[in-house]
Amino acid sequence: KAQHSCLAMADISDEHRHVAIVAGRDACANIEAAGQTKCEATIRVAMKDWCSGSRQCHAACMLRQFYAQTGDWRFKQRADRCAGRCVAWDLCQDGASNSAEWWHGWQFVQNQDIDMKILGLHAEHCPLNGLRNIFEPSYMLRCGAIVLKQSENSLSVAFQRLHKYFTEISTADLKEVLKVRLHLEPILGVIDRALSRCTCRAQRSVDPWHFGHPRTYTCSSCSNPAVTKQLTLARTQIQIALDCLTTSAVLNHLLQRKSLQFGLC
Image (cartoon, one colour):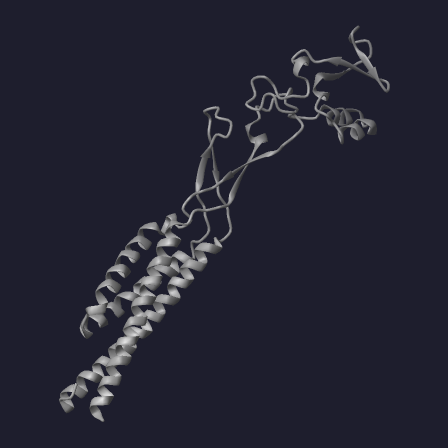
């Protein structure tokens, strides 16, 4: 009866050790995947940020300025559907110019700094030249940075240690199993810290129109769900491995005591 008890105890101990090894290897795979995951978020690069801000570029709507100067609601009404060509005109006093043009009782003269050939487009020297001066579309740039860049070194060390522990543990004795248990808890701490840094804050220097004057944009994505899932799985698997190794170690200890007591195992 004692011999059967020892054999059953040995089988259960080996089974728990096997479960721990499988869980540990799965945790390694999840940590490695999390560490290599790239941010899929897009960084909004506003085209207006690249505009030279000249009058030709419609940096300020002249119709709104005319409304501010005169209080004539018709200027405000037209400003709501301005096509960017208002920049060609300046409001002037009656009789100030022989070439003045009239609109609803107001006199206007053409601004000499405006290139009428490209009226409605950005200025020739502007990086956005050739584009309409009334639109503010965005250039959407995929971030592509490693999400866990801040935790990259600590996760790499954790992965290497886990891989080593669970490669050697299949033939380890009770003393070595107990050492592995002690080493697993700090790795849980590494994963917890990485979980708190699952938001990408990578900085990208971008020059979408290749003018040689890059600007820096910071990614502000929310917590990455793929990385969070992988690290959470890894943590759960390490906890399973820790529990199974504890059980295996206790059973091995009891097995050794029975072996000494009965000389059967």
